[in-house]
Each structure stands twice: as C-alpha cells, then as structure tokens.
Image (cartoon, rainbow, N blue to C red; front, side, top):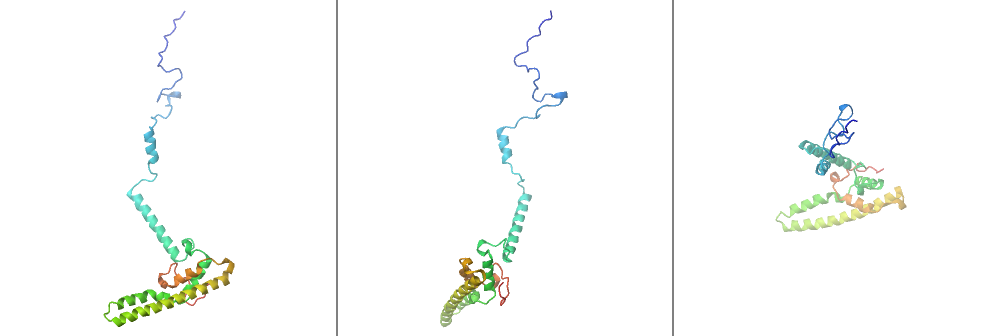
Length: 199
C-alpha cells in the first residue's frame, strides 16, 4: 500500500490558483500584470487636466479668444443679429435705428458744442464765457425737443409698419438716445444713408 503524500501547508496555494503575475494558460501572464493604483494616485489622475497646461496652450487659447471677440465686434458693428445684444435685437429695433440714421438730428453735435464751450472757458473774456454757457443751454433745449419729436415719429412709423398691437415697448426712448450719438460712433453702425427711406 502506497504511502500518503504529506499534507500541503495551510499557506500554500490550492490547485488551480494563479499567483499574482504568475503564468496563465500556456505560460502567458494572467491578470493586469501591474499593481492596482492607490486611491491617492487615482484622485491625482482624475484632477490632471485633459489639455497640458503649457505656455503654448495658453497662448493658443488667448489667440482664439481674441479672434472670437474681434469677430463678435465686427458682427455687432455690421448689425449681424447673431452678435447683437438683447437691446438691439428685432426687426422693430432695426427699423428705429434706420429711421434715425436716415435723418439729421441736433443731438449729433452736442459733444462738439460742449467742447467749444469748454474751450471758451479758457479765454479770459467774461462776456464770451457767459454767452457760451447760455447758448449751450438753449441748444440743449432744442436737442430735447428734437428727441421728443423723434420718439413720437418713430413710434408712429412703427405702428404703421408693424401694427399698433405689436409695437415693442421702449422704442421711442431707444430712437431718441440714438439721436444724441455722433453718427460715426453709433453701434450698430448706420446701415442707411441720410435721406434714404428705411425699409
């Protein structure tokens, strides 16, 4: 009768168990073949930015942002609806802008008039300074009258074109404030010539 083999020690691997990094079928390595990363290493990997934080990447992002801003500025100046702020959006706002830009308004020369008055204060002639201030205030009164008339006429034209029940609020004030801006400083830029009837 054959002798029984010695019992395996308790810490010995059982039959069929593959040791870490040991061979699998046909001697091929089994499992990942590397140690499982610790929790700290996993968190560090998750926090690592997807795009390398390099000078080249920052410069490229800055250039892209500048390009987008320039494109938006040009689009707004040309009246492109995609780049207009909310206050300038809509067909009625465009009509009001065109109505103002098609005419002449006293408010366009308010700034030059103020500059002349300021220059007059440097001249040591009290009478000239006095009449310059008086003339400026009289001129401002006429500007206010022109703004009120513009507001009334624009709202009347909008009602006629779009219908009284569809007229947006604030169009009169919107048009009046555009009259006190010098033509070349207006945004969006004028899309009609002086004397041209707005569409």
